[in-house]
Image 1 (spheres, one colour):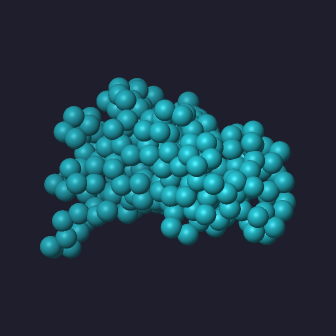
Image 2 (spheres, rainbow, N blue to C red):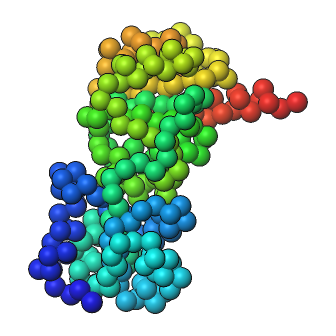
Length: 263
């Protein structure tokens, strides 16, 4: 059992709390039973798994599965696990995995979102979870956004991170243009738009553009939209949280598509 915070492996894992170290080491952290259950169920490659004795006793079957799946497994003390984890009260299991995205974006997506300069990991994680729930099949994130594998992002996805097709793009305008050429309509929200989001035809292949929490969508991307829609707000309300706005748009698209399929 690893009990010392000075152990080389423990020192290395503690560094992964920082984005720079995750990028340098090429791995990221998976924390908590639920995320590890999802990773195990999908056969996601794991490098190192650390669990406390108490956790291993409570989850013998999952611990056995993780031992077979990971390159290295270690039992650690409660103090060591707490030092490695980014959460205040970790539940006893943590792992590292190589930095790659598990699900590729399909060649012809039908419902996608492109997120520009998103900074809040909770927002991004909620959007990923919502996109998976609403049936979106593509998510692009600009390279100047929060890391897709930030620990808070992963926790906020409630395990849907492994199932949502995602990609980081350094050239969002080129990506939007590619989607247009593939037959997707590009939809952006704008407070001055004449039509509401439920008046737009979202039954055709659609890409929603959503921007930074404070600054919104850049002028360059806004200019590429084929359709501008507004989300009605009561007087005195300036805007909606970006994750809530995304949910409204995706579920309206889902509602419209369900209606046309209903005999």
